[in-house]
Image 1: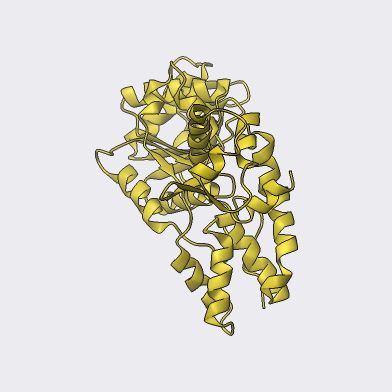
Image 2: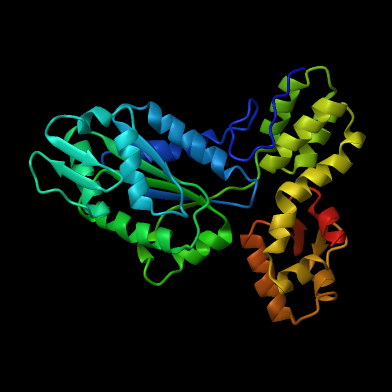
Length: 341
């Protein structure tokens, strides 16, 4: 049987659980005459499917008439990347190749219809956006793994300025909770704080069962249910569990490799950036779900601090309140990972 799964982050695999309702909502809003927002932020834990969703939205928008999509690197000068991306886009490049245009990107010399050449990248981009607007084109800028750096802060200021001038520009970005939170809470970026944020939770268990059933047709229903439960709805685990079960065809044979994949690709990185106090709370767990009372008896700090660190871990999508005063891990086999630390 051909492998339908992948462990490559951001790549659209042959088999994946489509968050179609989220994708459609973003696309539909961007395409309205008066959109609710010109910017959306997709947030979630590593491996939750942020990049796949961003890719899906950008591909759907790209298919629509009158759209230009430019993907940029958040760790480089962004306006320059946008201008270059527009110019190199095959759908609109012809708009900038007439004799009335003089264009030099490396030196950023640019003139339109005899205007004085300009070298400021923001001015260049505005002239290009005027051309796009004149021809009924809209621009979607996609940014994967945004963080609070000088390039992103500068871009957010410039993007707000472009919106004030009524240019048809839109942005879709992804980021980890801590990076998005840091960027939004910057005192000079209140505009971004009001942007709609989509928190990616677990995938629907029934959809996972349905997809596994369509791939592993000869397997018993109990096996399919066990595979789906093993993923805990975690997008990356859905891919790894599917790949390993395709390889071994027995659930009890996949645990060791599953733990290795989760650790090397995701959990090691998650753990490395956690503050000491949050790690200490996680290491108080000796089972997947524990009551607040049990944890309070084990934590090395006071009750008030416990509440603060618990909420931070919930916002990082590592813990979830499971009701009746109980807290549990959101990620599959994360307890086993923590116990090894």
